[in-house]
Length: 362
Image (cartoon, rainbow, N blue to C red; front, side):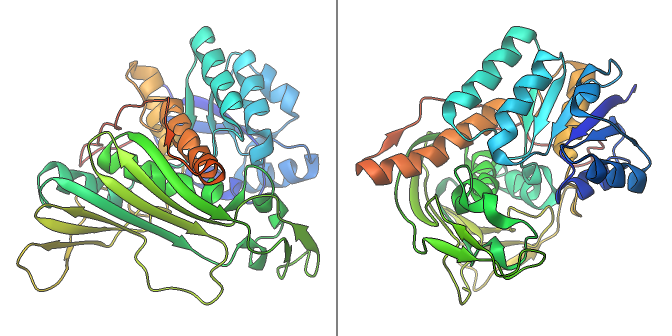
């Protein structure tokens, strides 16, 4: 297959794994990178043997068919729109955009241009969650009834070199980590019908304890503890709690799905592998299920690989813009429901992503 040539815009913390894995997949090849900080782009380019250029040069390059947008959330929509206007397909880090209006604008422009939008996370394509998808479809837990998810931590100011944007609009635990959980839940249970929840901002300021900005304070603009409930079109009900306010840790599971005949403990949806644990009705304890699918290591970029192969073959890609917008709307819905004291009915719909074949090679 003729590889799709890819350019990366944004060479910050997350770009390393995309560049590292860019040489692993058979369907695409990263050939260039750009950043508002030219020195940072040049350093990444030298490290991975690609060329550095300006954003304008990258977007004007006729060789590049697809742009991976790794900018901060506030810039996601703008860079996506620029890439689409330049005639490029675009794959963006989560979330799709900061606002629903921006997300719609991205999808509408792509439709007018006949181009594709893809969006992280792609962890649901890893061996762990794909094994869980297969188990549910095979009836291992009977009919899915409910699910619980917990992302409980104390915030990124303790480890991230530049954590301020996690506490600005478009950040917070729901917009940072919620996409992993919500995307996994849609992959497992299908699209969401409505959500409700409660949200609070516990600490109005955060003090950075990581380097190089140790001791600086960050004003918090977003909720940092969100407890939500989701009703799925399938009838299943899920509870999801995301928090940056849990200072002393927890023993709660990341994600569990409860069925009429058993319980499935799903791996951390921010990872690609296992373990997958299953307990059927009548059994005394959980047992580990061997993974049925590959890509159990850190396979970030598999969503790009699937998208690139889909571009060549003409089929739909799995980590789609429609899925990402559905997740974006649900995240805003939790905040809206908390503020208004009501349920939020989702206007968007997306297809349940088609499972990967067990022996898929992208």
